Length: 208
Image 1 (tube, rainbow, N blue to C red):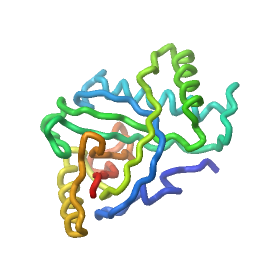
Image 2: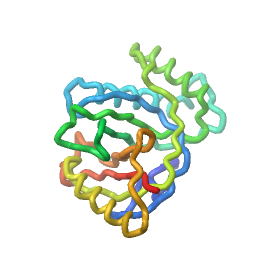
Image 3: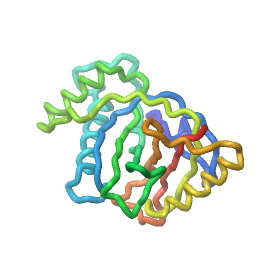
């Protein structure tokens, strides 16, 4: 049975539909940075997704290749995530998607070292004849956050974020979105196959 991070770490991937406080430990990610409207056809964001999954599945399928990764165990590739920000905006202004800057992410299993990651980038580039060099190994310690499961369209997220902010203030916290702490989304649904009103997205904001 493949290890599934969503099921094993429900506090990070399957929060309730009401705001909760969580402390997120340091994790390693495959990351691709970019900017612009994520919905743009052939845009930077869609290209980034291809790079992320190319590296992620190269690592997952390494068990069938020549590289034996120490400590490897079979696992389900974790969900796509994203850090989002806009200059001068605390949170996200969905009416100005073209102004988004983002880091798209997929969590790496703890057994993957930087050397394993570098191998996967080279291997994916060689096999797919595509340049995967924009993918980077990112260690991120998110720390104290408020989070909530959002059901529905991405454009409706501000209402869920408002509930989160109200809850954190009731608990004695303040929002702490900075140049190093971001509006964070974890995508539990495939937007290509799911009706907008049924999309499941974890929304997470840093607090202090």
